[in-house]
Length: 344
Image (cartoon, rainbow, N blue to C red; front, side, top):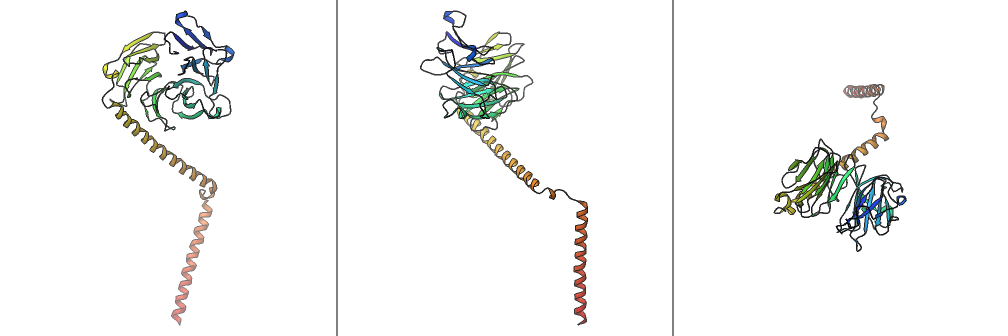
């Protein structure tokens, strides 16, 4: 939404961006030009915090992030190629986006390949816009959201797991769910409870995770329908949740007070949990790097001295024979010396 309840933007399967005003009927009032749009399905649209309220950005599996002004849909205002090799060609396809209004120049992209990209729109050069990458999923990242209370920590959903990350740690997530039997499709944080997030599954289940209660299993699993749940949206007040299914049905759920009201000392407790898990992962990461360096040094040493590892039996016998006769000669010389001394 652009900020006005009647105005909406949406991505189309042919890559175009469409803009609706429900006060003017059911047809879009503006559509981007095909030639200037994405060449793959447009998967995510997010409106930016701006004075006009008409700016948004989009991503697609064609490997681009495009910025638009809905007053001028003929072409995008900016373009970013999702290229971590910095060769100018798309190497990753976008599936999800994350934008926090308190950090207006920063945004994140979840990719089809399972990598999450942290980006800065105002970088000095296009090649520097992709600041960092995080790898951990085995399939597309369908959901990506910063924690509303701890923006440095963000949630991702992809393959069979949901993961919680810290911006300070790039090689591994700090917390993750168990591997489910069913594929995960979406997820989001609670807007009122820092330690609570929700995930949806292909088997129609909604899982509620509360890290203040337990961390290894969902606090609640609810079978919403008998088909795949594709998306979740939670009300700003945190008490109502809408679940969208594969066939287009929407189920509205009301959450209990324990899930929609912040608990006593919850923020402080979650701060300790995040800090503890981040520290643990940093220690493990440091240990892993140390082991890799030792293995690399050992491998290089073996490459320099390959003969040290290849023991030739004939050479070993010759060396032993030489040592034996050297010992015999030494003992013989000692005996002769003693005999000469005795004769004197």
